[in-house]
Image (cartoon, rainbow, N blue to C red):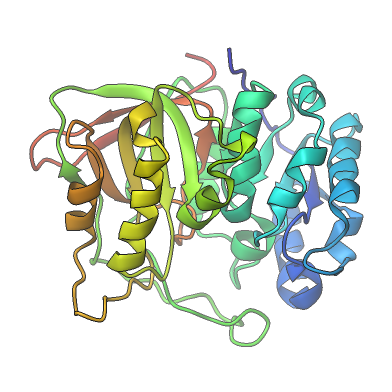
Length: 341
């Protein structure tokens, strides 16, 4: 049975790990700002050597990155590990990881984007819930720090706000998909906006469903499908997210999931808000029509959630349980089920 990591506490020590992009080196101002924001929130922050490295396609060699994570897990003064940023190359690290150690250490692993492959694998190979949540450069490094919604959701789900049994997911009042280039134009907070894409029922189901949360970035899921690291629970509540997509790419990536059998092992599908959405060359822009066409008809589908590459963002317990209620045209209800339940 999958277990939850030790909850974070006020003043916890977080190791910062950079197993993917060398963004801390490329964007030092934003990285430093992220470290400071974590410290301002009361954390003791320890950047690991990978945060100062830029080697080949990543930061350090895959075996060295795995050893760095193992060291943090064995360190009694380290309470959790948060990724510096995403990228493309964490898949190279996965074969070097000690999954038994990850499970026995039972420390929170936090990140998204490229990190999703680790989170999904840890829930299956290490029987450990991990957190699809904010990272140092991308969220904590915002000009005014992480958005309040991002911070409050992170605190609630990781246990910082106290023990919990159920967490109804609410919709943020405002959001942003404004592009500000890191260390060049991000000297101010991104402009918030309201309206636009909202949480909605794309396809209602006949009953409430409950399942194990599994998923992440559509691009990252495609990297592990067909490998030993795509192990998926049979009762998955699948969540997917991405940014800058047009409906044709969205359709292709969903079709890949369907052909790989992902939806055969699913009880429902949750889709993140797609920031900076594009149109097809034909002018077609209906992502919901794509979902209804490709996701099997018996599965409930809800969309518009603040997942992953969304500002602000939810923290999702990968490997944890959740309930989804979709009925007719009413707004869906998503409830995360916590460790105290």
